[in-house]
Figure: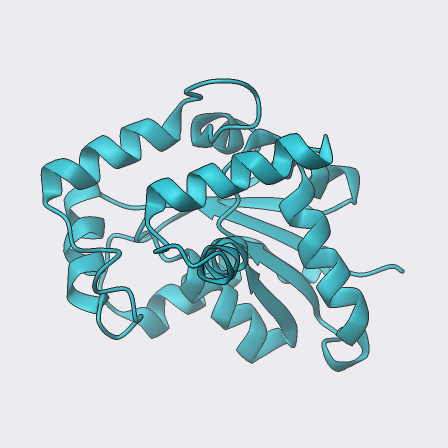
Length: 199
C-alpha cells in the first residue's frame, strides 16, 4: 500500500490537532490521534485517562510489542481498512517517542513539529478544555503544566518512555503558532507543509 504519511508532534496546545483537522478537511487525510488511541485503551481498562496513565500505557505497548513505533503501526492498520475513503493519506498526531518519528521516516513519511509560547499554550488549553471534553484531564495550574511538559520532553527511563526533545530533533518541518486566528494558522500550516512536494 502506497500512501502519503505525515507524523505530527509538538508541545501541548501548539495546534497539532488543528493541523490534522486542516489536512482532513482540505486534503482528504484520515486524522488519527495517538493520544485518542491511548485514551480509548485507558477507558477500556476502566481507568481515568490522565496524562500519567496515557504515558504508562504507551510505554507498556512499546515494551510488549518490542517496537517503539507501535502507535504508528496501529494508526496505519486503521488507515489500511478505510484507505479508499481517504485518498489524501494518513496524518498521525501526538507522537512523543523518537521511535515513532523513526517509524514515520521508515515508511517514507514526513515529521512535523508544532510549537508556541508556553503561556500562550497553557491559556489556550484551559480556554478550550471543556469544548475538547478534557475539562478533568486538563485541569491543572500553570506550574503543574510546566512540570508535566518537562517530564515529557526527556526520557525518564528506558527507550519506551516519552522523549519529545528527540522527536523534535527528528522532525523535518517546524511550525510556530503564537496567534489566535485558527483559519490563518491553518493557511500558514498548509503553506509550511509544502503539500505539493509531499502529495
